[in-house]
Length: 74
Image 1 (cartoon, rainbow, N blue to C red):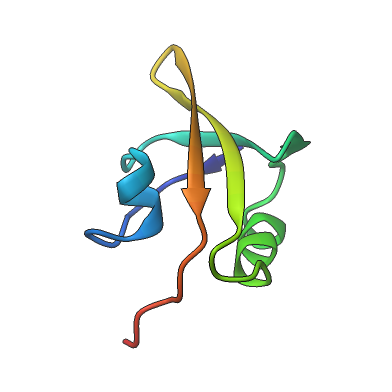
Image 2: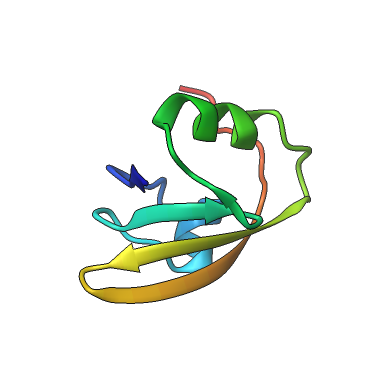
């Protein structure tokens, strides 16, 4: 899985309820096996697209719908 290290305040992941420390296990039923490929998958998604994410928070499984946004300027 992919460990969520940080989240933009009011960004798509935060709005979907993800927290730092969550471990993403699936994007749209596709296993999340590598950080780089997972980030590429999100980076290439069109803004506004909905992505179903399954994750682990501690020992609890969870799911969220993330609506892809535009990455804020650094």
